[in-house]
Image (cartoon, rainbow, N blue to C red; front, side, top):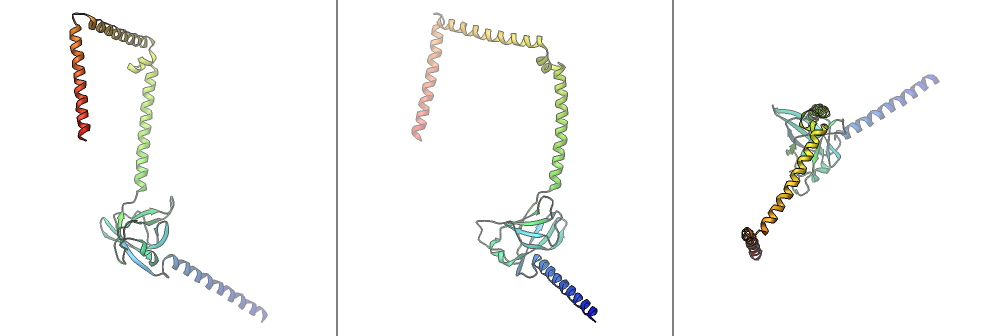
Length: 242
């Protein structure tokens, strides 16, 4: 009899704990799914929901305020997503707020984030539609990174070929860097150009002092001075008008 009584007590404790855990689980899931809160519903139209599922979170200013209640395809390029949101935060969500699909962490579940609008005053109502924004597609980013990586490899290979040719003295650039005689010829040409410029300046200075050409250079100098004075007068007139 004592043994049977002990078994009944253990059975009763086990059943009680099971009911307690079941109640706690129902309460936790119900709270997470907004089953016990006063809620309202709004909807958004997306072209691509990027793997969003019913039950995923809705966030506002980084806080979980609701869940995805329903997802329905209404056209070949339109998907309606119903958001069930806690009534207590409705006063903060404005009619011109926007909803965007994001990710919970780097590789987490998809969520919807409602972007608040600071200067708006009209509060969103139950059953309203909220504007949506096209989410960033991770696949497109990875594809662009792959394309950029492929292009970088091609550029690096081409650059390697060019450097190899330069080292081998091929082409004009290669001769410029590797051919000593070619480089000396360029140096001599530069020196000759500088000497020719200096000689030309000396000739012009000598010509300006020649009595036959002195009048010509004086007229040129006067013309430049006159043009300078006219430009100064025009600038002064503009400043006075301002």
